[in-house]
Amino acid sequence: MIPGSFSYHRPATLAEAVNLLVDLGDEARPLAGGHSLVPMMKLRLATPGHLIDLHGVTGLKGIRREGNAIVIGAMTTQHELLGSEDIARSLPILHEAALLIADPQVRYRGTIGGNVANGDPGNDMPALMMTLGASYKLEGPSGARELAALDFYQGAYFTALEPGEILTSVSVPVPAAGHGYAYEKLKRKVGDYATAAAAVVLTMAGGKVATCEIGLTNLHETPLLASDAAKAVIGTSLDAAALKQAAEAAKAIMSPAGDARGPVEYRKHVGGIMVMRALQRAAERAG
Ligand SMILES: Cc1cc2nc3c(=O)[nH]c(=O)nc-3n(C[C@H](O)[C@H](O)[C@H](O)COP(=O)(O)OP(=O)(O)OC[C@H]3O[C@@H](n4cnc5c(N)ncnc54)[C@H](O)[C@@H]3O)c2cc1C
Image (cartoon, rainbow, N blue to C red):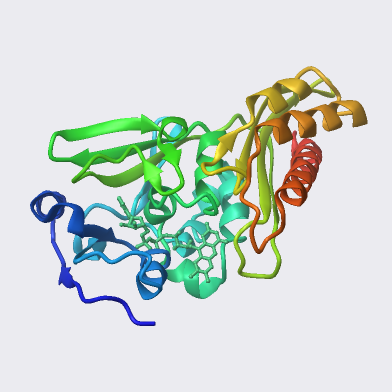
């Protein structure tokens, strides 16, 4: 199919982009890499009358340090993330997960801002952002505000973005030196979205888990932070009983859709396995 007709706008500044979104209202959508929006338009699942292309807007690209956080401009592509030595060194889980997104063609165009703002439960970055305690900078007609990734996702394709707001950057606190990390993603084939995926960031002390965060992708209508699962392993040496308890606690909050990737029970089952694998691999990597 081909998309419905639309008008194309290419603002040069953020203020111009926000004004266009406000003036054109519900009919307008920001366009970033287009690798989620354009396929939806081709299927006529989205029929925006106006596309506001963010590629001409200055100041939305780049990766920089701000204190103990790494700030990533919304229009930074997944390919650019993969090329950043700072990300590979300080946020290796982001590097690992970006490599599991689609294929190089998609990663050349797809942006971090589009991935986290989209609200698709299948996107990989949102659960990671929750796991890492990241926050999003949103700028709109009433000015700028910062919102925790944890508070951003409200339902499938529903987020806390207010009319006219644009997500301008993502701020990710750098985890402790020597932390362990892993992103485990089960997919049907290379380039597919997750059937189930789990992100783990932890620290170990004296052979026991000292701190732990666990995020889940595509196992609910929003990304999830599995806090009870993380609590189940803190203070343990990640023995078989602790791993099983974490998997069960994670499964208790999963409610994936039954779809072409498998029925609900299967997806929850493999979701639990992703949690256990990610915990084990993260612990092996912890310094
Ligand atoms: C074949 C294929 C396989 C894929 N596999 C995966 C996968 O495994 N994992 C994964 O995570 N993704 C996957 N994707 C999606 C890909 O990562 C997209 O690039 C990403 O989801 C959206 O980023 P984008 O820059 O392309 O955004 P766009 O498609 O341009 O926009 C997506 C949505 O976000 C809004 N938006 C974009 N930027 C902003 C902003 N700065 N502020 C406010 N709203 C904004 C748009 O209006 C739109 O509603 C796949 C895509 C394809 C085509």
